[in-house]
Image 1 (cartoon, rainbow, N blue to C red):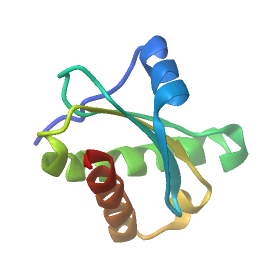
Image 2: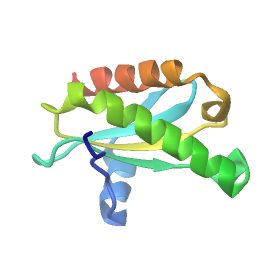
Image 3: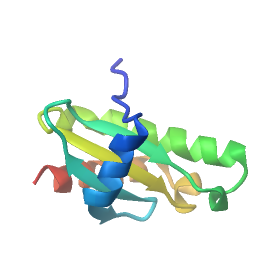
Length: 110
């Protein structure tokens, strides 16, 4: 099983938020920016308006897993992605999350 490449430094996340392209889907909004050869890295955030800590953590885990499963297709790309979870991610069917993640990765690779 492949571990998810995570975007962890706050300055890297801030750079993606300020310079990245915005891509919106039903379950999340993503900001995407090319990086300098570090592979595809993902950071997932959830605001308190999503719900309790349990709900926010579940939403983050679901979206992170969707990107992890789809990231094999994006391995050739060197992208930094910051994903902001929307409330719909909590109740959305997982195959739909997978489709949304794949479409973001495909659009970002262009």
